[in-house]
Every structure is written in structure tokens, then in C-alpha cells.
Amino acid sequence: MASLDEQLAGLATLSQAQLRTEWRKYHKGQLMPVGLGRVLAGRAIAWKMQERVRGGLPPATNRELKRLAKQLAHTGGIDLGKKALLKPGTKLVRQWHGTLYHVLVLEDGFQFQDLHYRSLTPIAREITGAAWSGPRFFGLKEKPDAPAS
Image (cartoon, rainbow, N blue to C red; front, side, top):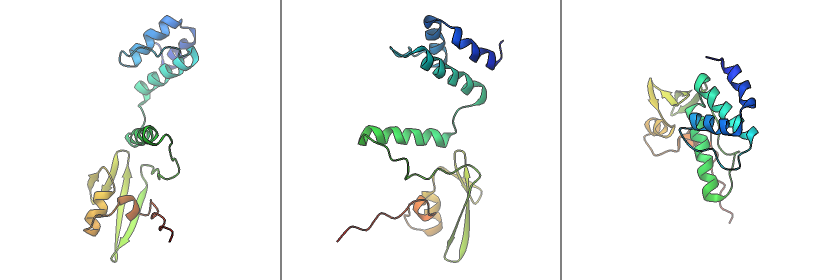
């Protein structure tokens, strides 16, 4: 079998019909969109080839992309500046009532006291005993502006 580099290089030599076949192979049987140019189709196929060999996007990135797509569908726009993106390995530290708490950012959530959590909100609730926004509790989200009087 050819190496990934050889397969990627070979995409440039494929006919439109061969590209459609490769598209179906790497896009779960879906038909290639009508009017999709050779270059863009080749890039999309190349992405899928590399994804199979090297792995795809981290789950947190996929969740963020889905959130942005949903926001775009509902509002017609997206706000990239308001969401803090945390890299795996980042340690969040928060002091609460004299006790220091540490949370480790993982690829697929957070680790707090040797337990795995999908979001920060249940961690904030466990620490405070109250319904806090996890991102706000850990200082990742600003308080909304006070209404003008």
C-alpha cells in the first residue's frame, strides 16, 4: 500500500470521476457536492485521509465548531472573541473560602479531585454548593455589563 504522502500526491492526478469515488470512500458514502471544484474536493479528501492516519480534531474543538455553527444558524453571525479556548494540560486554580482548588484541562473535559467532568459548571457547584457558571467561577467569562440607568 502506498504511503500517505504518495496517496496525497496522487490526488492531483485523479479525474473528476475518480475524485467522486474517493469522496464517497472518505465521506461515508455521501455524494460529492455539485459544483465543488477539483482543488477543494482534493483538499477535503486529503483532510479525511490524514484524519484516518493521524487522528482528527480534539473533541473540545469539535464541540466548539458545533457551537459556532449553531450560533451562526440562529443569529446569522458568530462571536469568536467571547469563548476562552483552553489547551489540554492547562491548570485552573481558584481560591474559595480559604481553600485552593485545582482543575486540570483535558482533551475531553476537566479533572477535579481525580474525577472526570465534561464541563466546569458541576465542579463550581461542588466547590461552592450553589448554582454557579463554571467558566465565570474560574474567571474565564466576564460578568455581563450592568444595565444603563
